Length: 66
Figure (cartoon, one colour):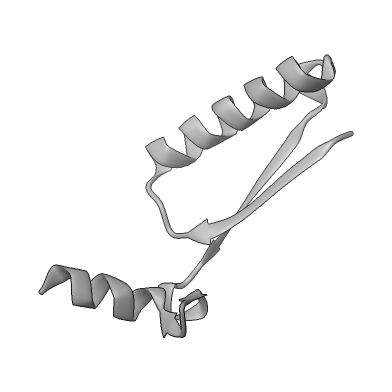
């Protein structure tokens, strides 16, 4: 069974559902493998565990909120 694994910041349930639906649809369109064969894992990371340009995502979000 093909596995799609995505790691990202925490998101709400509706966003997860949309990701699972759209990632699976795209994979089916590209591979012609039936949707029921795909497994999707969403690994949520705390924003202090994600770094971009030397800053944590939490720091970037805090700076944008100012």
